[in-house]
Amino acid sequence: MYSAKVMDHFHNPRNVGEMDNPDGTGHVGNPVCGDIMEIYIKVKDNIITDVKFKTFGCGAAIATSSMVTEIVKGMSLEEALKISNKTVAEALGGLPAVKMHCSVLAEEALSSAIDDYLAKNPDKNTDALRKLHKTQHAHSEEESE
Ligand code: FES
Image (cartoon, rainbow, N blue to C red; front, top):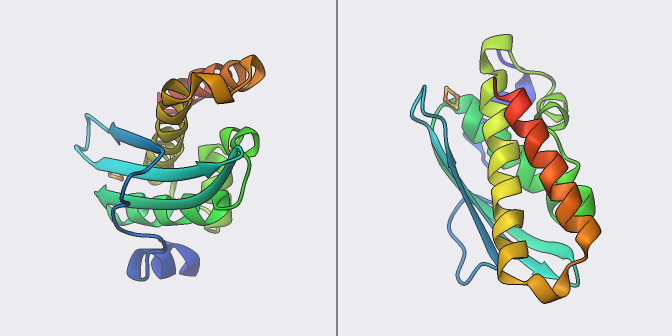
């Protein structure tokens, strides 16, 4: 049912844990399954320099949150905002159709952490970045339906 990569990230999650004084924190939950995901980011000069996660959820939620942290570490905020749940699922070698919503949680948690950072640092960010965030957020809502 699951790819070897999913099983690897489930058994050996990367970047798991909390972060002291994160620059942005994302907190999302899926009301249907009740799973919860938190992502913490450190940002310097618009680059995500560190990222950690905490997930109370299914194996696919743990694997997708682990993978999304690996993907975005070192990325600019602009690049990170373009990461979709499909990018994460593909990087894991695919997910069963019934588990795609778990990858949406990873996309939304990252988006929420960036949103938190943008809200706390209005001076450091361009309008283009905010616009990109809004577009990405609308996309997430479509994907989660
Ligand atoms: Fe809820 Fe996977 S079953 S996120």
